[in-house]
Length: 83
Image 1 (tube, one colour):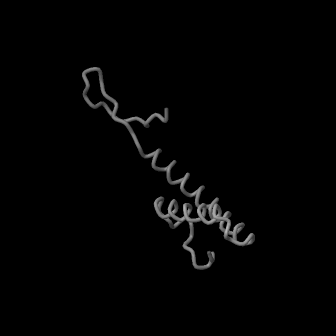
Image 2: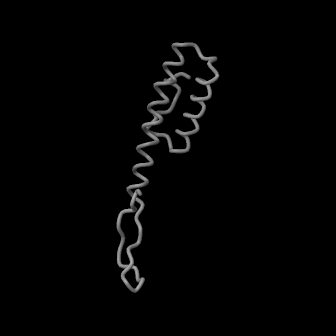
Image 3: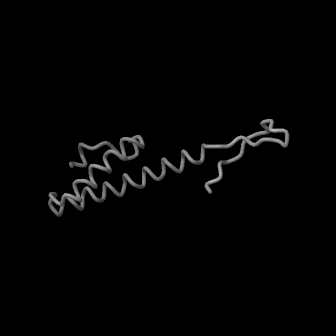
């Protein structure tokens, strides 16, 4: 994996980042990557993980639930509880 040929992590969609992260985990688990390359792809994997977490948090922040009044009529929206 050559960092010069790879897209910037921040430009990847969630699905693209997860797919690349899965490839990195697979390569590291197989153990057929040289040590220096392992360190390089591990660092990219960490960046991908952080990017995915940020995208998930942003999606969670956008999700709202509809608040109903006592008669069951929509009254407004409020943040979705993370419970």
